[in-house]
Image 1 (cartoon, helix red, strand yellow):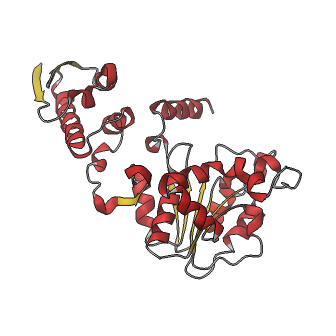
Image 2 (cartoon, helix red, strand yellow):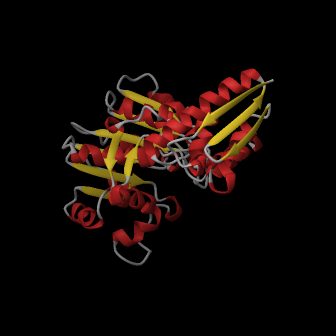
Image 3 (cartoon, one colour):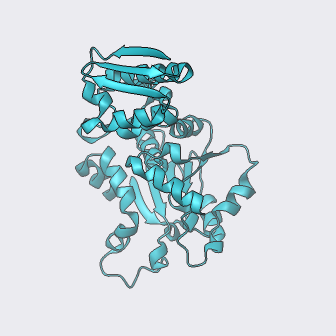
Length: 312
């Protein structure tokens, strides 16, 4: 048995231990062959040599992350323990996608989010496929806002299938925007994180930022635009064909979806999986598959997703 003591000088121990030692418990659970104790600015471990090597590496990486970002959430602790946490240390200013509202810095935070950003530079059409909470749509919208800011495109178009209303929205009260808001709210939420409300309203009034259901894409040619189709698992094969053939000159398209969350009355009518198969060998098209490691919502979400996957 060997022992190791690591000093936390220079950081607030609460960042590493978590509120009521919540992060410390996650660390202990990750190393069952070690006895881990923490007091003040010192964390000690005793036990298996092989486990000790990994433990020291993980703790030092977490300390470096705290020193760099002055934070360490439970989700980030899990990323260091079980995922690709070391990659987060490599994130610098060059990796900032957008400086959002209230000083919020928006970056690609997981391995597949970074892969998505990287592939965006060399592909005009991306498919981002994976479970809820992995940041697929959020990262796509951040890329779109950056492209608009850098004048790479002239407009942003965000679209979703309005499944619950069967895309027959005329019977609902209000104007078109009011009819669609319940289905498109997640897109508004992301935009409000990245663009000041007054500026966003102006961009929408001028048609520079447009949000509409997929049915409203028919007949259009989308030039000089960054276009995102969200929740594509709820689109039929004919809708996806219609949407993808709207691509005009100097256009960037990103399609996001979760094949496990089809809301169509007939799940077999979803066209996403078939579309991926049809387009898999075409140059200029890339597919990124997200998984539970990319989930950046509440730390319990990835465990929930995993539990349902096991059940299925």
